[in-house]
Amino acid sequence: MKLLFALLLCSLLLTSIFMEPVLAKPAFCESKCRARCAKAKVKARCAKYCNICCAECKCVPSGTYGNKHQCPCYRDKKNSKGKPKCP
Image (tube, rainbow, N blue to C red):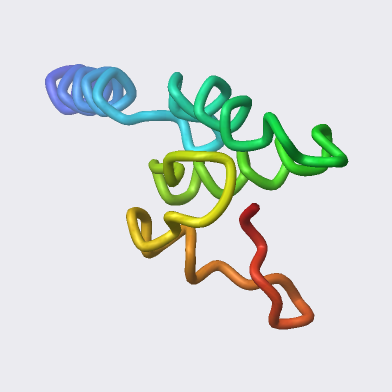
């Protein structure tokens, strides 16, 4: 019984070490989104949605506009009205 408990505890510890937290944003998201939203009229809203998309897709297209072909996941995300979610 003690051995089973020890193995379970070890497996949980190892799993938590190697798994990335679900809500954590990749380290590069903030800088990439800052560059992407540099020319946006409403920078805060642009950065908010860019960071959401980056966290889910793990990429941000280069430049301040367009180039969405570089990141298909980012390109294909839609809001509830069917319009592009990601700036």
